[in-house]
Length: 267
Ligand SMILES: Nc1ncnc2c1ncn2[C@@H]1O[C@H](COP(=O)(O)OP(=O)(O)OP(=O)(O)O)[C@@H](O)[C@H]1O
Ligand SMILES: [Mg+2]
Figure 1 (cartoon, protein in one colour):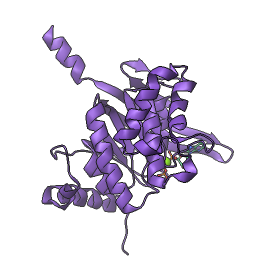
Figure 2 (cartoon, protein in one colour):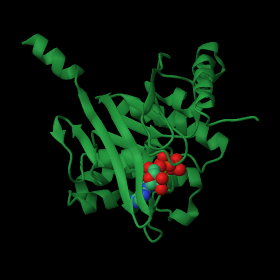
Figure 3 (cartoon, protein in one colour):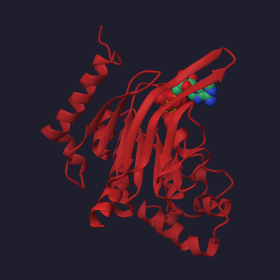
Figure 4 (cartoon, helix red, strand yellow):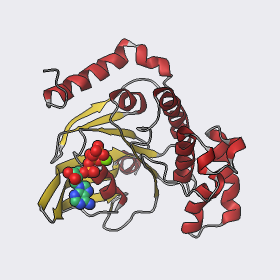
């Protein structure tokens, strides 16, 4: 019995099996994903790194059930995903907050749309706002918040219903470097507390290594997985870890990988 339990715990929460995606467009088919096999365990933090246009957002949409694969199968918790999967939260590059709603009202939108009990979740929204350092800002409107603050509110909105999976599609891409560093540190803390299974799309090799248990490197379109790199740096990681030889070994390796793929060129 215990053996069976151990096997279940080790099995993938998210399981992409030979997933391919082709978009039919007016100008012909666009092959976004060639064949992706990827297993993500419960509680893992995984980053997707790949050149622009290679199909990272497409992959996220397939996991969220917002699009269906042309071939292969997406499975979550051993169920085949063919329609929007609701036990997840998503953060996009732009916070996508509603201008006419305050910070807390934007977070509560998730609860209202899902038909959940507002009274139960209001204290949870306040607690999340406090965790991201925005206790005093619950009644501010988006145009009174900085870019980093808006992304924090978006993160709270993605977490308020306590989903099992957190998907983040370049959530910090538009932020300045110092705000981004702070967001990375805060996200790590929140992720360690909440034990979500997290997938982060990023163009930053440093961010991917800092945040992740595993970094998945994707090739140019049509994308496939070209490397699955385990990051064995102890947690919690302080931002200073980025100055260590171990950290720099990972980032140098990934940079060399992209150079070999023809993504970077000095010539
Ligand atoms: N709905 C769609 N219809 C047609 N083609 C699409 C659609 N969505 C994406 N594509 C195409 O699929 C390919 C992959 O797009 P995708 O947005 O997944 O890339 P990405 O890796 O997220 O890029 P970026 O890093 O720039 O965000 C691109 O060539 C894009 O033009
Ligand atoms: Mg994208």
